[in-house]
Image (cartoon, rainbow, N blue to C red):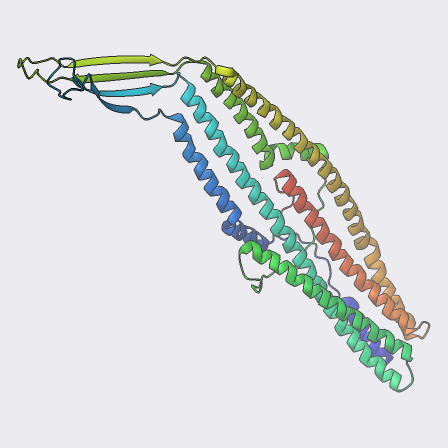
Length: 425
């Protein structure tokens, strides 16, 4: 009977999941990310916003519509006749406002920047979707792995419990041993139910990204091994400046404010108005005298008097906006550096803890269980020590996957902050 118990426990040591040394690209995750981006209402909303911004470029960079006018000139009020007075005529006019040279081009450049800024909003929204989907996916993989380990442990404990019951029935095992095994089975069962609840939560989050129902099944791969990243803050700063859409959007907004300053300064210069008129006159009815028609050309110019300093105020506003975006950029970098420091510290800590488990605690726990089994077989220790050793191995295995998942999620957070991939998973 004791040999049967030993065989069961030895199988458990062999059956515990090993840590793969292969780094495998997770195609499932990439498909989930692509699908989430494709169906995202936020990206579609921002795409509509981008289209609207592009449509405004033509509105601001082209001439205003010309004005066609029709007027009656010197119509006598006693008869309202067109043939009574020689000064009476029907006047047809066409006029066109022409902004100061360069003004339309300057306004077009301003509105073009609006479209570029919205494009960066779209890219940052996609960046955020990648982070959210990746973190939820990694968490789902961990939960499912933890469930698998827990269910294997529960099955093992049930096999052990059956052996202990037989031994107890023949008075070769104590009641304490039996109660200990039953208690562990209950604890593992409770843990499994808790993990299943977390699995449903992560499924709901992922399905919300995919616009699926909560019941939609999502497959996940294994938690594979990976190479640790080693980056300094100065490297992260450089990558973020070159790749983070949010930072690039702030820079574009600052450039837009500079262009707005240049465009606004055109208000110091006059606009022009050119027009032509054609006056058609009828012959005088009393004398049957034919009258000649008239053709007129007009050129006008606006007077940029800058009443109340309104143009000065617009220029000052543009300069203030430049300073606002410059300070916003500095603030964003400051906040990113704080996050970089926190992430690097956390990644280093997780890396050391993972190495400690892989190189120290996990081999030690396996060795302890093997030694405990040998000692129990010869009757040197109580069976409770075997259960404790097995539980310790279970906890270390689960904690190892927890740390690896936390590492990957922190990398996802860092990738979001810098706007670039750091790990090819």
